[in-house]
Structures are given as structure tokens and as C-alpha cells.
Length: 379
Ligand SMILES: Cc1cc2nc3c(=O)[nH]c(=O)nc-3n(C[C@H](O)[C@H](O)[C@H](O)COP(=O)(O)OP(=O)(O)OC[C@H]3O[C@@H](n4cnc5c(N)ncnc54)[C@H](O)[C@@H]3O)c2cc1C
Image 1: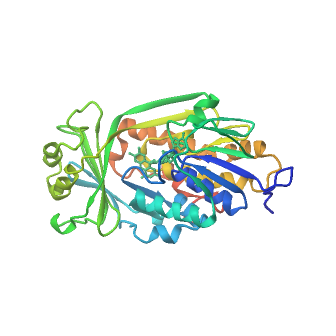
Image 2: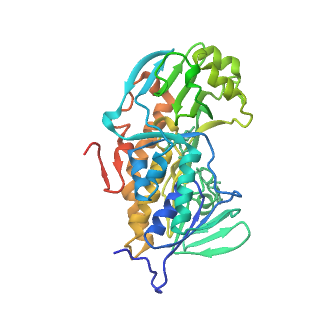
Image 3: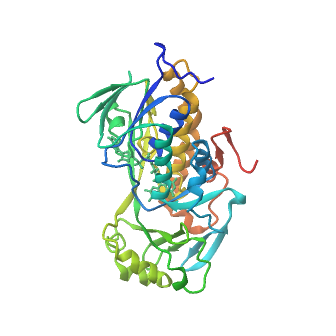
């Protein structure tokens, strides 16, 4: 049975910094197992940043575990095939041996988690920025307020202040490529003949390196991931340079015209963060704060959610939070580390352009089932 009381007999309390996918998942999972949970988000509201997102079996199982799966399935899409094109010719069609996967807008996923966070009774504080934590279980806010807890979770993203205030040893680097991510109207009927419900990973290596990850999210919304090297001033320009993109992907012109209208478009480089440890005393880091990874395998959020959910599993019946966190890292980290390494390697060599690159090793994290704590698909 879950041990949700501290040695003094009161209900255990967690303070969580960050209201992204990792923080929301940890908050729901801990609350579901009886903890008092307060979530701090530095922005004025809980909202998603970015455009679209892929979730695989591992992330979908977490959603099941936190009671948000049905909500997410409505309004998201599983494409019939993941196709890879090189110079506008198909080189592979993958279906992952029936492994569940799903594409959606980030706001769709985030909204579902926020609804669930409210439903289970997490105490939410917006405009609440964490600036430091200490291993004894204290979280300091930007206002100077210091909060004590049995567990502090740093889910405050790649620039984590919780992490940096404690001084975890870390390596951080950016890949040579980056991406402009946008949601545009589907415009399917204007695209001409084609299997436009598929995910299509469209690569070009000449005359320039440009890639579009074409990802339908539902009947109305299309996620475009438009990749170009950071050194290419036209490919990385925002708002997008319509001419260079239409030249390379003429058949997508109706969607690209919509993309060019988006003044808020951003070019983001791929970041990787590797730490010596994810825990210190009563503090645990989850999500990009601990293990930001290149998006080649579309697993950053999936691993973040699995790891956040797993914390709640591991502290549930623990006499010592500190020991439970050490055990948690030992248990979940190897899969994330391997996924991060393959993602970095694929990004460095643009390996996905070859097609058929979702090998068993590349799908290891996706196949993990956090509810049953087994790593395989199909069963
Ligand atoms: C181009 C690209 C494509 C990707 N595609 C996918 C994909 O398809 N599938 C997938 O699984 N992953 C994908 N990822 C990875 C995924 O986006 C991240 O791994 C995931 O969003 C990490 O979630 P998080 O909650 O850890 O961090 P974040 O999403 O960064 O959330 C952190 C939250 O904390 C808040 N915050 C920050 N600092 C503080 C503070 N000091 N105090 C309080 N609040 C704070 C922020 O405002 C934010 O709300 C992609 C990443 C990139 C770059």
C-alpha cells in the first residue's frame, strides 16, 4: 500500500517546478497516489509551447495511467504509414509492427493534461518561478518564498534553474540542424493526388539540405517541421522564406503559403543535455531539465512523461524518498540514455533520410510499457 505520510504523520507533499509535459505528468501521478502536490509555472498561464508532437506506446500508456488517454485520442491522429521520401521519391514505408503511435498538436496534449491536473486537485500556481532548490527539500521562488517538501521536482525545461542552482555536472550541446515548427490548415483537397493522411518525412540534400516532416494531426490541422542547418540563412529564416521552401517542395505550396503568414514562427536548434545524476537528496529532475534530446526519434516528451510517471510509482511505498529516487534513476535512466544517444547520432548523420531507420534499438523507448514496467512490444 502507498506510503503517503511522512514520519510526522502528515500527508507527503511535493513541490514541482514547471508545467510542461513532465511537470504535469508528475503532478497527476503523485496526486493520484495520495500526495499533496503544488505545481509552479513561471508563465502567467499553463499553456503549451511549440506546434505538433508524436507520442508512441510509452507516452500513450502514461496517458492511460494518468487518466487522460481518451481525451487525447479524440482530436488526434494515427497516420496509416510513416513514409520517408528522398528528393520527393518514396524510400520507405514503416508501420512499426503495430506499435501504437499518435500525432497531435501540442496544445491538444497539454490541454488534456491540464484538465486532468485540475480534476485530481493539484494546487496550481502560475506566475510562480522557481529559482533554486536544495537537497534537504526546499524550493525557493523568485519572490523569496521558501517552501519545504518531502519531494522537489525540477521539471523546468532545458534551462532549468532548479538543476543549475544545485550544480549537477552537465554537458550541453546543440546540433548543427534546427527546425521551424508550425501548425497550418490541412489543405488536403488542394494538394493533388497523394496519400496525404500519412506522416511523410520529406528530405532533400541538394541543392540545399532541407527537410519537411509533414504530419497531419487531425482533419483540420497539419504540423510542419521544417528543418534546415543553422548555417543556412534562408532555410532558417523566420517567418519562413516562401521561395526557398516552395522551390524544394512545390506540391506543398498551399500549406507553405499558410506557413509564411505566421509571424510568430521560431527557428529552434536541437539541444542535448547530459547530467552526472538526476537526483540529489529530495530533489529529482525530470524531462528536458535532465535529458533534453534531439528530436530524431520523437521521444523527448515520451521519455519525460515515462520518467515523471515512474517517480510516483517508486516513491509511493518508499520509507526514504532519497533512496527511492536513487532507485528510480537506476531503473528508468538506461532506456532514456540509449534513446538520447541514438537520437544524437541520427541527428548528426541525418540518418532518418535513409528510410527504414526505426530499428528495434531505435524503438526501444517507444516500446516500453511504464504501467507494467516491461520493455517490449508486441506482448
Ligand atoms: C523540434 C523538436 C521536436 C520535438 N518533437 C517531439 C515529439 O514529436 N515527441 C516527443 O516525445 N518529444 C518531442 N520533442 C521533445 C519535447 O518537446 C520535450 O522533450 C518536452 O517538451 C519536454 O517537456 P518538459 O516538461 O521537460 O519541458 P518544457 O516543455 O520545456 O516545460 C517546462 C515548463 O517549465 C516552465 N518553467 C521554466 N522555468 C521555470 C521555473 N524556473 N519555474 C517555474 N516554471 C518554469 C516553462 O514555462 C514550461 O512550462 C521535440 C523537441 C524539439 C526541439
